Amino acid sequence: MTIGSVFSLEAVYVLTGVTLLIFALMTFADGANPRRLGSGLFWMTLGIIFVFGGVAPHWLTGLLVLFLVALDGFGQVRRGSSETDPVEQAEHARRLGNRIFIPVLAIPIVTFSFALIFRWRGMDVNRGALVGLGFGGVAAMLACLKLTGGNARALMNEGRRLNEAMGAVNILPQLLASLGVIFTAAGVGKVIAQGIQQVIPANNLFLLVLANCLGMALFTIIMGNSFAAFPVIATGVLVPLIITPFGVNPAMAAIITLTAGSSGTLMTPMAANFNIVPAALLNMRDQYGVIKFQLPYALTMWSFHVLLLWLLIKIS
Amino acid sequence: MNIQDLFKLAGVAIVVVGLALRLRTTLVVVVAALVTGLVAGLPLFSHEGFFQHLPYLTKPGEAGVINALGKAFADNRLITLFIITLPAIGLAERYGLQEQSANLIRKIRAATVGRLQIVYQIFRVLHGLMGIRLNGHPSFVRPLIFPMSAGAAQSSDTDSVEKIKAANAAAENYGNFYGQNLSPAQAGVLLVYGVMQGVGLMVSVGDLVLFTIPIVAASIILAVIQFIRLDRALGKMAEAKR
Image (cartoon, rainbow over all chains, first blue to last red):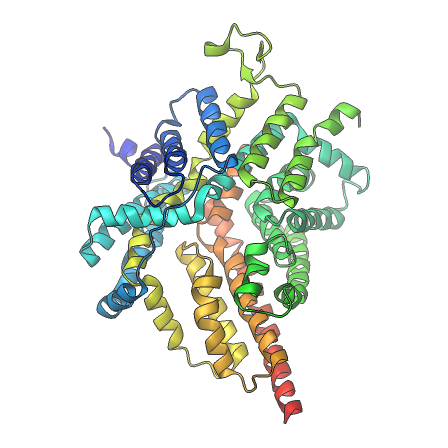
């Protein structure tokens, strides 16, 4: 085995898959989870996809994805009830102080170091950052164990607690990126692009940028989720009408388009977790009070996105 | 544009309607993917290997939609890579990570409500930079930022308190939404990376983070303006009461 295969993306996927398989075993044994079989199967299947995704036939991975989604669709993915004790946390905080930040900071430091090492050795920097993220997670685990004197079982159980707290929506961004691929294969983007071209002339950069950011914000407002809007707008507007014809830096245009959607998130009751639930948590009289406060800010931020994207394309 | 083309938008319609109706998001997205592939004339499975002799399910020479889904999902495993960071963050939480963060916030000597929101927003941007995903509303805003803000306020009439609460929630959202793309470990950056790769454009995660910087800068400057104006409005409301 060479150094290259140890510090590879596939190795990091296997490590993540093994972590998920350990979570799954713990979930199967968790009497506090009302759906421990379904939940365990969900994380086990995801773990299997992580370990074998690089070598398994695609039809099998595809069927496993359908199985994952069916488990979630039938409400079989739930969380256990492992809460940590706040008194215990306060005691540890007094004892460890700011040292508790060391393992957490290890993650970005290792990620960044790997990216630098990959660049220095003339390899793909993106790959370096992703591989670094994986090994950063492992380094943080070791640092955390050493610092706290905790055991490996507690380590995995706490990871499982966080993972289950987020639940099945954990895989949503990965599913959305896959949806984008299918949209591209089916030519959905072309249809949207043709529709927009009937209204906006192909050489009017400002109107295209405006339509791109407006589409992103409107889709986000309707769906309550900018991540869901992104593959639609990226394949239908951003890439075919702006990036390709104008030769724009795709990273710049894409990340600005994504946060143009975040401005939409600030305006919509559909993003209940961020806008409606907090109003309830704070016992506000007006359940739309948070949105009303955010509205002028969100509109200004959105306009800034339009201008920034247009200007950056103009000057480049 | 012909009718066949318009049908291709069925998947987009399913995502929009499904999420607007608050149906299970994972299910909506995968159904949209399958329907999009099928109306575009793709078979369920590729005509090779295991399914070669099955009629209806395959078409010679065409990639199947389930194969495409499986390949795309496997190729995009990088987006969900953050799961490997959860054990360390979880154990650190058990050993007082949030408690110690709260201790740091309590040390903030912000004279006014507005300044406290600015400091909290920057604190949340730093979370994004470190790659920590967190819903701060229940863990920081309700137990900590709201009581501290109420303590810093000059008046406690209901209108002022309502405004302060809205500002607390907003500071959390501003810091979280715009700050999170500062780390390649965050879902937003990885989603963009994955989607762009899917359409055949290689982008660098470093560039994605780099172009987030002007956006974060604007998000903070704009918030400073809004929160300073909030301080003035609260001051006026307190004077009017006297």
